[in-house]
Image (cartoon, rainbow, N blue to C red; front, side, top):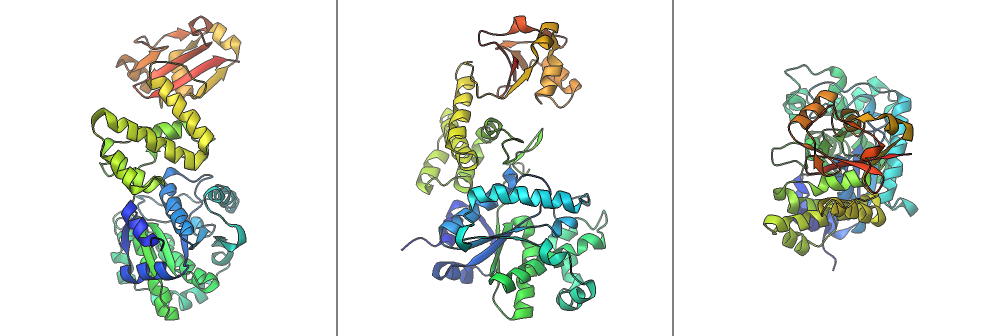
Length: 410
């Protein structure tokens, strides 16, 4: 008999909290369960932060359960206050719809939506035309304000001020679960652990209103050992869209995780068997770098495909294995005439996002953190021309040990 997906998720390190653990495990073992995860369309691409929930969806679908990916065309109009110190900026309906469509394209790479194996829904379909008085009569009577104010997602906003606008978010998310329960017999909501309060709201609403079982389960949030959310860089989010974060940058981000996080990330973000995950996670000293190579390759393969993962791995090994050049390194080209005139090093660094500002670039150069064609430089007024091209017709700038960028003339 195949392993219960609850046990798979637990062994791989996903599960943080569950409303009715024994009942959920039993349910997932005996029938195909329709479950949902919500994605608020706040950007035009999913991020590395979303990817953990996408992996959980994939495990669930592989085990025969039916995912609903709920796009937040309606809830994005309000904005979830959870974990935010300020109110989310308001977005237009057109922007939200565009973002939701981009999410749909990306999710389709990971989830099989054919033949009703999964459902893609958008809560704009029922939230945007709600009659407010009817909504309060139908849904509002089931929520205690005292209980809501005690919820973690609102507590941290009370000092700065929580608007009534955002206070509605929990009711709207709970309404989504109830609506999906009515439409598709959806019994289970999954999400990051920061969604626990909102998920409980929906579970209790269905149980009170319909006298039917409903369940919630949350996943651990992926954080560094300091408790900072993973998937963020100095440049911003790590995106799943290759045009926003190149496969090479994506690979490098995961290749550079802390040693102590390797086993956890292998369990959560790859499909490698757990025996192999534990073996790799137990490697010590310089050998842990092999485990990081394996991890970065596996996650890049899932997100960008095997060919891009191989290219990124080859580029990484070329650079870190002795200064060999590779066409897969992030590259910027300029008109040949600009190189004939000369371009200053600081401009090149800023254009390649190796620095967030000119002063940041200057500081990094002064501190000895920049090399040009494998030679350390300390002159921040350095002008580079086509005479500085190496035998491959390129200039290779390295910042620190791990950030590289190649410049060529077109």
